[in-house]
Every structure is written in C-alpha cells, then in structure tokens.
Amino acid sequence: VIRKFKELTTNKKLRRQCDACISSNIISAARRQNYYGLFEKSNTTLNALQTNNLIFSLHKYGIKLCNVFKLSIKKRTLPGHIIKS
Image 1 (cartoon, rainbow, N blue to C red):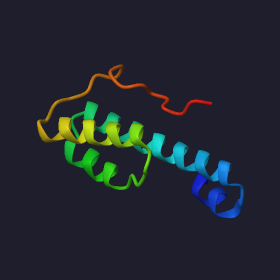
Image 2 (tube, helix red, strand yellow):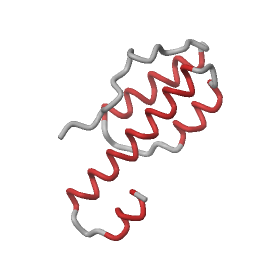
Image 3 (tube, one colour):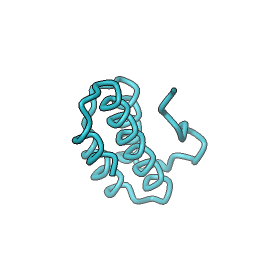
Image 4 (cartoon, rainbow, N blue to C red):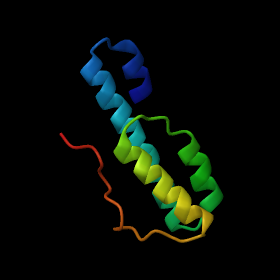
C-alpha cells in the first residue's frame, strides 16, 4: 500500500517518508526473523532493502553480521521504530 501511494504522489518529502517507512518495516521483519533463528530468511529480507540512509544501512549490515555468525538478536537490542517525526 505504501509503495503504491509513493508512486501516486509527487511530493518529495512524502516520498522520502514512504521510503523510510518501507525501510523500517523491512528492518523490523529481518530482526524478527533473526530473533527466531531464521538467519537465511532474514538475509533474504535484508536484500530487498535499498536505501542511501546511513542508519538503515548500519542496521542492515549489523543484522547481516549477526546472521553470518548465527547470533540471535534480542527483541529489545535494536529500536523498533527507526522513523523519527
């Protein structure tokens, strides 16, 4: 739904917020998959993340590193809501 909305709007600020929301959802899903031991699935989910944002990139590669070493991230280790208003 958010991707479709992003395609329909011409407002650049709103498009950036849509990108941030999508990225946040991908990071949350990958973190949850890691927590439950689904390391390969978590890596596959993270491959869908395409962002230039440094914070999202750090989260992405931090989770990927944990997946390589098969370390499960505790639920409260990473913030659940990355987007700041």
